[in-house]
Every structure is written in structure tokens, then in C-alpha cells.
Length: 357
Image (tube, rainbow, N blue to C red; front, side):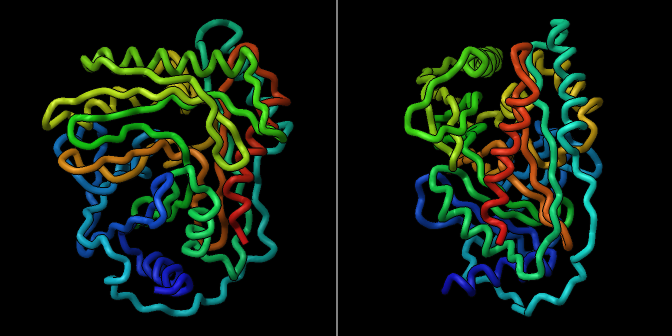
């Protein structure tokens, strides 16, 4: 199948409102595809409902009626077998629309609100995020952008999915939430960001502290699940033009593990929410000012009897009929400055913006 035909098939599936996902694992050459041939995707209102299940999981940051946990049944795993009508995109009136995105002044006010809470010592860490909506050009192709991202971001988990319940999302993320085969499993602490101009990367106290908080949290959560993990890190990894600090956790799980319960124990990690877990999660939902939906949730193939690869949804965009909404965030500590955090989110937004053509 030619590159052109592949991306047209994906675009056609979106137009047909099909339940599907295509994803490329880090380091792999070819993407993997899953599609549900009939019926509605399974919807859940609790992560623990994933116990004993398999399928492609799409979990939001916060489960709600408008953003349910979705599981796509993998009836078809070969894109070439998909029978879909490929038609030219109808013309859409996309010009002249205004988008009320948060500007630097509004971000500064939000930062001050979050930062004040941190300085009071009520919460140790908070992640402040924002979205940026841009007009969708008539020539934009979600399928073409997926293949462009897969080619560009070889070290990341690159994905495109669509369901009637979630809409269409495209992204690239380096952060494993939970992955494994058989009894051997892993998770990752990914915290701390640099956007270096050279190969030499140094880490300041703020980024090292961020990494320590996430590492300590994961250790604690795994311990409550009675898991003893082997730790490797922290070390520096590259994701596009960004650098992050990463620590790996390797551990064993029993046969027929309660994956849903473990995922609920881990999500959301301090890398996307904050500490303490419940207080930070509640503060963000009340004060951040918008619904993250599937940004900073998690997604990927869940199959405890074969192979599981679940990633945190970090660099991503939500694809609408006439707009594209890009998401980015950064971790705040008492030592954070508004200038640095704004700059970090600007750099992260470029990950998705760079594949929109």
C-alpha cells in the first residue's frame, strides 16, 4: 500500500466515524493498527473496570460523561483489509474564524494562582497546562500528519485514534505509564525538561527535584501494590527537540494481574498532575480553567496475556472539523518562574505544530 493510499484510508475512517487506532512504538519501523468492525466501543467510568479486559484503551485525565474511558475491540489489525470508501474532502469554510486562546498575561495570572498555593506549602507540585487552537487548513490530513510524526519522532509512541465518543486525536509521547509481557513489566518516571541548543545538557535543582518527586511517588504506589521494582536512572533522553530526565522501574506481576487496579493506583502521576495526588488533582480540575479531556490521560494496547503498551498522552492535538487544538503543560514547584514555564509550554506546543502542514 502506498503512503498516499494509507493516509487516505485513515482520513476516510475518520469521516465514517469508525472506532480505530493506529500507533507506532518507539524504535519500530512499522505502525500497528486496530479497528472495531461493528457496534459501539466499550465505555467505562472507572479505571478499575479494565481488570481482565483487552483492547486499545483511551483514558482521559479525568473521567466524565463527556470524556469517558474508551476501549476499542481489536476486530481488525491490518489496515490493508479495511474496506472504506475513499473520497475527496469536501470544502469547508475555515477562514476568518477567531480562537480565544490564553495569552501570556492570562497565563501569568494562572501561574500566580498555582504558585501561591505551592509557596504556602499546601501542595508540593502542580502541573499547569494550556491549550492552543488554530484553524484547520483545507489541505490538512490527519493520516498524513500521523505518518509525518512517525517519521520525525522515532523515539516516541506516535498515535492517531478516532471514536465517536472521544473524537480524533493525534500525538507523540515518550512517557510509558505501564508496559509489559508475561510477568515482566515496567513503568517510567519522566519529569524535568530542557530544550538544548547543543549536545551538552545540565540539570538544575528544580528539574532534579521534579524528577525526585515523581520517582518517589511511583515507588510508593508500586509498594502499596506489593511490587518490588528494580530502578535504573535518572538519565537524559531526547524527545524531538526536547530533553527529559527519565528513571525506569522494572518489576514482576503475577499471572492474571489486576491491571486496572494498578493503573488506577498510578494515574495520574505527579508528572502530569501533582503531589499530593488527590489534592493536586482536585486543585487542577477546579482552577486550571478548561477541560483537558484526553490530554494527560493514557492510551495504548492492553493485553495482559500477550503484550501491553500504555503511554501517557503528552504532546498531542485534538482534531476538529475546522480547528486543531494543541496541548502542553509544565510542572511547577516553589522555585518555578512564570517566564521559564511559559517558554517550556511554547517549546512543547511546537512538537505538534511542526507536523501541521
